[in-house]
Length: 454
Image (cartoon, rainbow, N blue to C red; front, side, top):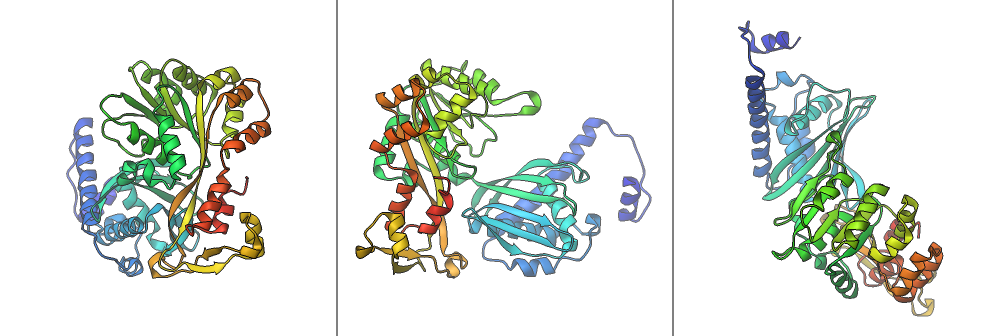
């Protein structure tokens, strides 16, 4: 089949000769490198805005990759999509194939938005080109595949995680964009109050113990951990991480990636890291009892451990660890604190509109309706693509454990009792959102959207 296709494309009979496995692999790598280099160069050359719809219209209606001479139109369209996504600070690009439609959507500030609907016939071409760039098997369409692309787009280095998934109407592709500059963020860039930031900096400079960051997927937990590591990153400390995957590379920090295919789990990686004389250990996520117990033991033997948990609240992290099987008396001795966080969209400064808060909003914000504050609402303008928002910031609840909280954990007090004690000294995550609403940074609707479970 492949030989017949090659003969058809070449327009003549092709001589056959045996080839060693090593020579075949080398030729294949060179072909991939050529395709990727061409794509990368086109991506780097992208500067001003391009009309994605016009580029899509220029591509011939064919599903045969071999009928295209080096696929320049497809490369140009894909890299224009990447360039536009990066310009809009999108976190993900979705390429979705339906029965009669092909849709490209960007996730910007946590919200999916449709940006392009190319001709349905281009689906296979686009997916195949992305697979080539990510060094995936273009012939395999029956199973999911994962790959990675590294590009320079408009002067910015970007890593792209590629995931393909077979569906009833063809393969779907999601590309997660990881801007390498985001890995250089510091705690000052995360939107914390000065009090919370200074308290967090003080906590991460402790010589040993565990600091946890909690929140749902996509709430910025990893970014906060990286910013904390940047704060600690100097030549006097040995900082090691185990992650799944490594999202940003940080100079001066030893980073290890989980690989379940060879039994390189979080627990196994953490055990190995503890034999590397670390001062600070970052575990991408505590997923099971084994990892949790090793992390606790590491903190009790003189290491600072930073990690994340998928819980909705700061105090909920304690309950989750106890449910995993970690002994409460070990938690009471090892936990330094828990930071719960969410991301809210920031109002576009070019078009946000002032208005007096109504009675319902005053009640939610805990202010007197007779002296209603001035709030701001989203409007929409060309600067924010008519969304009314531009960028995101965090809202936080930082609970640093004192002696009384430790005694509550040790005695297995209820979650409600621990929350009541935390509220004596620390505001809730919704309270931090309230402050940002009153400051004109975001809206009541945004805070309610991300704190519905509170």
